[in-house]
Length: 94
Image (tube, rainbow, N blue to C red; front, side, top):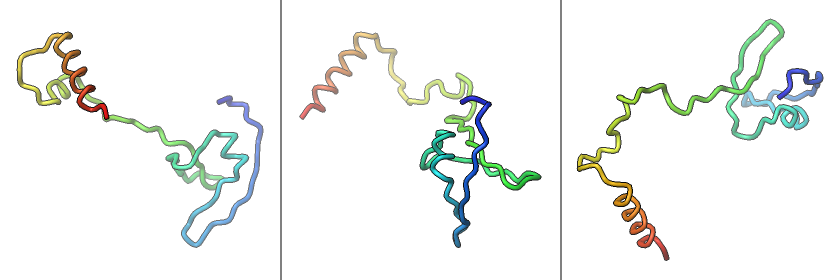
């Protein structure tokens, strides 16, 4: 998104539930969509809305996740894994 976005204005009404509707033109200009997480910050001019930065996963190291699948047997070859996946796919076909 370009930082040189023209100033746009809209108006809305605060509902009894504390909800506001962001005008469609402004949502489209920012590429904001339903269900998107936003951060609300208080600032000198009022309130600031900005997209939340979503961290899908907490930081982790390889040691944190090694063995997370719980498999304790001998290591499988690529061919053995391919055969198992093929067999599973055949079982799942209608």
